[in-house]
Image (cartoon, rainbow over the protein chains, first blue to last red):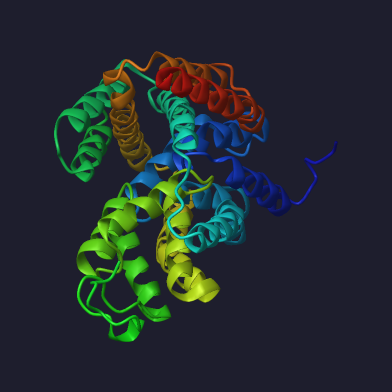
Length: 178
Length: 200
């Protein structure tokens, strides 16, 4: 059990490779598990670094899954970034390829409605857990929590471009309000 | 579905669906939608695939996305694989996935390097903290949007399952694989029984 000495690249590869197959509902549902491993059990990052990395991933273009690229870089540089990304996307991509082929061949077979209906509450429950964990990591003051709440309400009730809301957060942060 | 008068040979099939994309076209189309997609690529993928290039009808797109959403792993990556494979097999899947991931990975890696270098500077520290707060707020709004159908339908069973998964993963911090190995079969059985009960 001395895997603290193990090569971090291997640890990244199997951690995210396994997670790839368990991330029901996409990258955001995997955040609690990523946080548990990266912050709580491996101590690769602090809570604050984790929420910084989440912010950077939301700020940059591309799929949400790229948060693992940032984590991989933090752990083991450019190679770590590549391996984390590839491990998180590879196994599920192979599965998607096989199942996609299967479904295309059998003409217009659909997912049984029961499976879809059953997975909806599970994946929203995971997302809600992500919401909680990130709120706890990011909102270290009442003002911060107030900003999070305000942005949530604005994003829910209006069609404002999310980038404006992120920019607003950036300005408030820069001004030292948070 | 191509138009009924069209001959069965794909190259001459006109109208609704355009020419199937080549490998380079797959790569550039996915690279473009990925780089346009701040906070989610799905909207752009739909716009490019359905509206702009007409490679799929809206129904085909919805079906493909539904399939990808319920597979594990990043949804939009799965979509690129299934989409690319459909037109050009394994090379197509690789081209679409490389387009989707390649350019943003380069950008994000550069940002990661900058963060590792300058992350401790106070002004950047404060700014990122502000952005985190806002980014979490955006995520909460998305979660609420996704919960609305369950709330509107007063789906007690669905909401209880949701709450149980939330408690296990968010509050108790249990490992994801063990939670899912219990939650998914349980949810399948309960959902099946509820549906059968309703039909009877």
